[in-house]
Length: 110
Image (cartoon, rainbow, N blue to C red; front, top):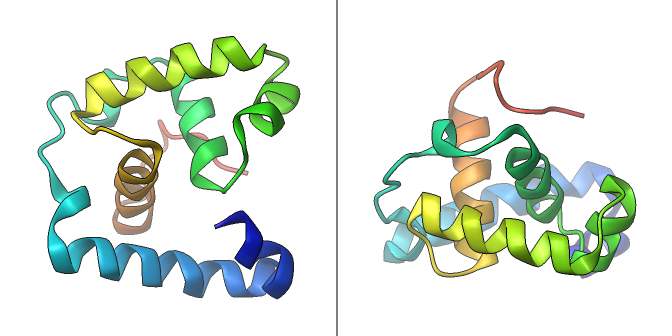
């Protein structure tokens, strides 16, 4: 996701996110049940999820959130467990799907 952002800029991000969401929905990979959903995440976990959903690496997210890379990995492990997903792509798609479908004030926004 990060490579595409750097080549197409912010304007292309919305359409790229839509492609990811559409493709994820077509094979069901990212449509697993979310045991606790976003409500099960702590505010810090939501911040981390927002960072990785925007295409940042663990190191970039760590710098922006003033955490260590190890701290980001710890948060990601908890996010995966709470959402019932197995990787960052599934977690990001879950986040993007929820934020594009609903205007939820409890989710962090830029």
